[in-house]
Every structure is written in structure tokens, then in C-alpha cells.
Length: 274
View (tube, rainbow, N blue to C red):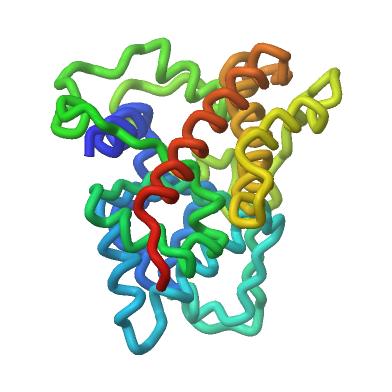
């Protein structure tokens, strides 16, 4: 839980607590409601394994619908909600529209929860291949608590710069209108991330993950993840003029390749036929 606690602590102290979703997204309606209020949200879940396991046993299929929606959001530029009541709002004739919805999921699972997810029937699902899994082996990293010290000022300033926000007071609580510089439902101002070389050619290094049909979905997903990770690091490196450099892309490819390969190694070891 260390990573989740630290992420929530930093966002809280940066005045961005309204971007955090900490309670279970147990239905598509809950996902809709979250994104209508905060179209760029961070979902921190320390019970992801339980959520997946319960989805298999749930007769209504509500959690499965929520997971499918989260998968669709990965490449969805615009989310249309025809029925406002589905998002927990008063029913109207107007269609709710969310531009560039972003739901970043920080999901934590224990080792015993991973094994059922590594069966062949599960590995083909988009949600698993779209998520970058990082295995934490050291006990001290699993049990460590967030340090009870204030978040460094430079870190809060950089977060504000990335989100194009004016400097805020430590511990301040920004409104949704302040966080998004406008009403959350409006079309956001997009920032172009530059790249002066052929990024697709560089991403071909991820073909080393595997050439068999079982690995192919992970190769394609790894390329998408590395591309997005490079854009994120570029924005963090230079919030005002983000640019993907050779060093940024090389680091992103290495990070993704290392972790996806580790995931597939575990899959080879732990998998069994459904």
C-alpha cells in the first residue's frame, strides 16, 4: 500500500484531493459519476485482486461492466453519457459529454491474487494487457509506510506546472473549477508533446517481448504504454514545452520492457488451463 499512500499524500498536499478516487468503482454508473465530476482522476485501489475475483461471482455483472468501461476509456477521446441518471445526476434530456476522459489506475494485488489472473482465459482480456504490472519483491517496500514529512515544495510546484495551475498554498484545497481551469465538462485545452524523430521505429525494440501469438497483445500494449509514458515524462521534464527526447524514450522502453517481460515470465511459470 506504500505507493498508493504516497500518491494520495502528495495529491492531497498539492490541493488536488478531488482528483483522487479511493472508494471501489463497482459499477459503470460509479465510473460515469467519477468522470463527470473529475474527468482526469486517479483511482487508487488496494483491493484490485478482490474486485476482479468478485466480478467472476457477481450475478448482475455490474463490476464486469465497470471493468469493460475502464478498458474502453484507454483509447476513448470522447465519452457520451445519454442518460444523466447513469452518472448519478438528475435525469434531463441533455446528453452528458466528457472530453478526453482520463482514469489512471494504481492497483495493488498480493501474490496469491495474481495467480488466478494469469490463466489463459484472463490474459487475453484488454484490461490486463493495458496495465503495466510492477512486481515488488522486497518486504520492506511492501510494508513501508509513507514518511510523515511534508511534500517538498519543488514537487508541488512541478505538479502545478504540469497541470497549468498557479502556485497554491500548501494544504490548500482546490475546487474542481480551479483544477481544470474551467468547468470539468468543457473541452480541455490540449498541449502538444513534440518528438523530432521516428518514435515508431524506436518502439520496435519492444518486439523483443515475444513473437508468439500469446505474447502479441502484450507487445502491442507495451508500445502504447511506452509511448504514453514517454509523453508523461516529457511533460514532467519540461511542463511548458514538453518534448520526447531520445533519453526519455530509451528510459521508457527499458522500463516497460523490463516489467512486461517479468510479467510474462511469471505467466509462463504460474499459468494453467482454465
